[in-house]
Amino acid sequence: MAQSQNSSVDLTIKATSFAGIGTYGDLMIGNAALEFYNEKNPEDYIQIPWGEIDHIAAEVIGKKITRFAVLLKQGGHFAFSTRDNKATLRAVREYVGEDKLVRSISFADVIKAGVRGVGRRITGRA
Image 1 (tube, one colour):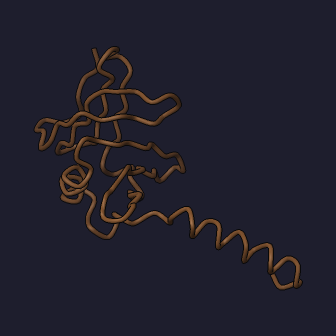
Image 2 (cartoon, rainbow, N blue to C red):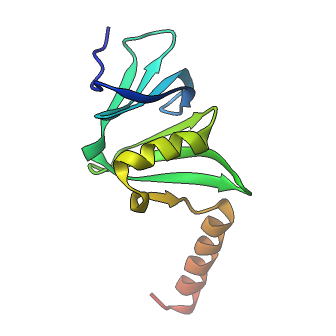
């Protein structure tokens, strides 16, 4: 069984990890790390120490946070969704700081950026 990095836990909540195939389990927010444990296989886990997190991007549709991604300093990322994403991000904010919680760009913004990029290439502007 995996050994938790946390000595105290602030929040434990049911969650889905989107690393590959969606995996169901529990997300734990504690004093040392953000941890995800698969409910069917305890040996399948993700432990992210607070010092390794570059920032967290939340996907917001309307007023609802649908999922969030934890981006690491080494360039990797993990995406999660919990039963209450707002409460989860409030608990995380205590450890990573409010400046590292950002709103991810929407699908419409991605399309706009792509159209602008194509327009720049056509007109010859870099």
